[in-house]
Length: 118
Image 1 (cartoon, rainbow, N blue to C red):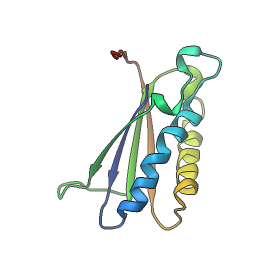
Image 2 (cartoon, rainbow, N blue to C red):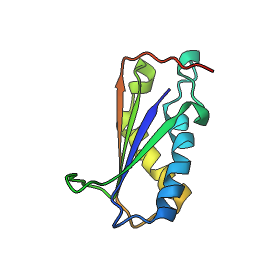
Image 3 (cartoon, rainbow, N blue to C red):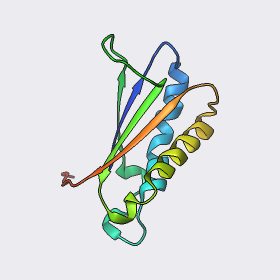
Image 4 (cartoon, rainbow, N blue to C red):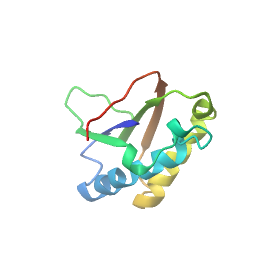
């Protein structure tokens, strides 16, 4: 169950644009991080949580929108992480029709547990 943190530099990114970006993230993360050969690593958009925050005066941001994806490690998922990050950025930019903003994606894989009630 990936957790995605999105931070916006509000002076450069409008409400309409960040709304489009956030709405596209679950589908893009699921598409690029799913591992079809491992049932426990198959993802849908409904498996992806997105948390949003605004730039604070103490933040030093290198992009207009910074996205950090945290997901469980699977060997198959770890292959080609830079390419997966690149494709997530590409697909988000296409979905949100963005060409003039700098968007960064970091994918962090680790060991973790997950449980949720109904």
